[in-house]
Image (cartoon, rainbow, N blue to C red):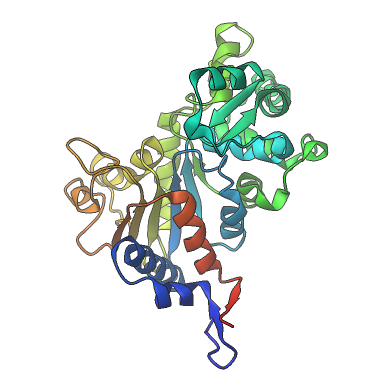
Length: 336
């Protein structure tokens, strides 16, 4: 959207260009402009999402990015996967703690005894979230075993979101559930280390108790095999597939390796990542992969010297929604 100087109207991207000139502000502006150019030139974008972004309600903007075809594939932690659904079914039961910095151990113990699981300044209600979703997805796991079928973790979520099983239980807005929007599009998703999540732990417990066979769940190795094909498809057009990373850890480390793995392990030609941006407050230090600058990835053949690279050392819960809204271009600001 162009700015209308006569009417004193400004898009969010226009606001970026007007206000943000140096330091992290410049990095955010430049990364946003390059993100937009990548899409405008026919490229696609891969999102890697760590942290607790779903609990922080990233879906308010991320769902629209998926709906408007601005995000084309996702890697996320098991927590972000399930917490998108928890927000959908238990939004009104979440409790916020703006004064969490001043809590004592006794305060947190009281939260535990109330059946709440604190995530910084908010909390996931156990009975309204975990226990509502558990019997519904357990039914899917058991049906898969009965039918001799196997699915990825995200595919089980897609099944319950696209059925009528959860619809009467919504407390949050479906428009803010990024996983529901992804399910509608059958968006490619990888969830490395899914076992490190509440429902992953619950699944392991059922397996240990002999109620479900572990084989009904496809593995991380199979996720990488799946990603080989999805990457090749998505990187085929325009400037290729970009990589937009929120936070560090396995959700970013796992998928970015697909390029050198195709090249060296499969010994097949592969296009490099066409764009890279990481939002992280991880300190650049010895051995800190999450805090490593992008040029280190050149030595691992994950990026090239030509790849547009950006690091925004800031809070992703502030930066990512601003960038997404600038790219969506759905609001106009009045300067009056």
